[in-house]
Length: 202
Image 1 (cartoon, rainbow, N blue to C red):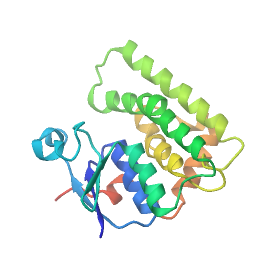
Image 2: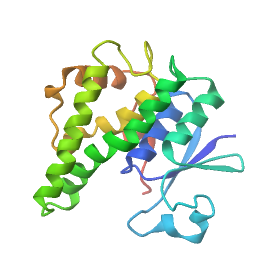
Image 3: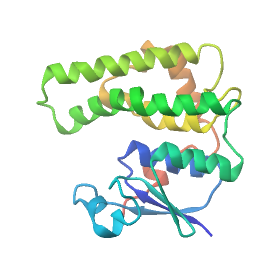
């Protein structure tokens, strides 16, 4: 039975789950959640995810939440993309959520939706994003993927954020190892842009 993914194509966390489903060849149905209208806070949605956030992945009668936890579940379920070291994979997932995601997603949000945001606040997140990209660039200098010789769920998680870095004003030419990795990831089977994996309702 195909799984059902609830979320938004504008959500990096939803994209990373859709990306992993596609890369592992898992069939799924996408259900759009309108975040602007607060559909993630309705009683029906909260029954699936007590945190009131996207994404939610429903496998059978089991709803799963928190994107990186969902990726870990998918790696265990499919036996794919676990990475050469489970510990390092988990470390990258935690780092992505703590350091990379805020540093890339916030500047992107400010550019797209809050052009008059406090410059001090914007700089704080831009600096954080640049520091994260520097860390990532150093890590990718000695191996093709974060998971080792092939992509892991850590690569999917980080890629879902980094591939949108340009929308936040980051120039990946400054981090050549990251740029080359983005190109390698983009060439992997199942890797598609967010709108292709999560079509908006007509």
